Amino acid sequence: MKKIFKSIIFLLVISFGLLYISDYNYLLTAVSKIYFKGHTTAFLSDYKHFDNRILPASKTPEPWPLHSKFNTITLTEEQEQININNETVAFLVIKNDSIYFEKYYDGYGLDSKSNAFSMAKSYVSALLGKAIMEGYIESLDQPVIDFIPELKGEYASQVTVGDLSSMASGQRWDEAYYSPFSVTTAAYFVKDLESLILNQPIESAPGKSYIYQSGTTQLLGMVISKATGKKLTNYLHESFWDPMGAEQESLWQIDSNEFGLEKAYCCIASNARDFARLAKLYKNHGKWNGMNILDSTFIAKSIQPRFEESPEYGYGWWLKKYKGHNVFMNRGHLGQYVITFPKENLIFVRLGNSKGPAGNPDDPFTPDIYRYMEIALELNSNVKTP
Image 1: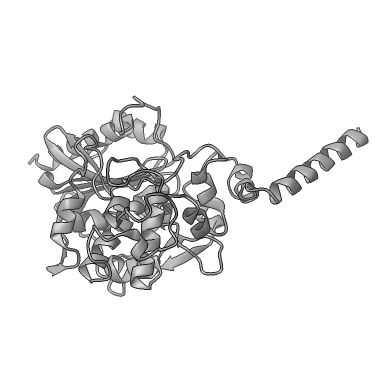
Image 2: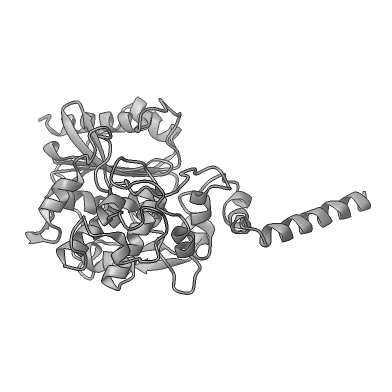
């Protein structure tokens, strides 16, 4: 038995050694931070195991007002069961810019942080709009190579910042979350994220069609940082987080390079109330307390499809026509959602550990999203009841 044990240890040492010197050495980080903790993919509280840049609370925090009917209703048994089955941790409904219903689960509360995952993409798109508004970037049509001349690929000179925001970059990328060997997984764990992204060439003609790629948003984040000369976290704070009155200190995950590059495609750790603020800004056409902090024309363009054949996506936002409503949402891995119904002046936030059962693979929206939209409208109808 001792010989067998020693042989196993020897093989493990050799395997880890070979892994360390291979192109997949990031898997050693994945094993220690994710897989050995019992997870097969990134999880809500994993930000605690990574490097982060602090996103401070606003210097003038602005609490959400409570609706006159705040928490006067209870969820139905069916609605509650959906939250239980999908391991919801935060459930928030904002009506007329006031909190109408709010509930937390599994030890989470008002100031609990959780990983937003790809909800961060909407923030990066908003930062693009801000950079254009402030003159750091000329327009959506400005070439990416103006900021990143070392960009590789046959079509590198043709891709624009607007192509990046609308997921039409032509970048080489494998959007696979559960494969340990995909570039998406590598991006989550590598020490030098910028080098990884710059090794993904623009290999197809950009601006032709929509293909969802996290690497494309990461490239956009790099462009914005180069254009402004600012870390994304700092630019987000001064542009939106501070003027919108965010109440809690938050975090943005960074790589382990000495300069600390934000994972622009994901990974802002914050709370349900503060996540809802960007939706309010977009719903109100870029105005906050009468101050115009984002161009309304940019917002209007962002929440309309760029491509007729891909009505589900605009510029950094998911879009859906649902029961007569033009809905826009930011969404993330494992079912992080901020869903906005502009006509109803309604914002719905759901954070949690699971999306539940998979649906039609040809539908860009999973079944839980439809159910949450339905719940939001059901609760909205209760507001109108005397």
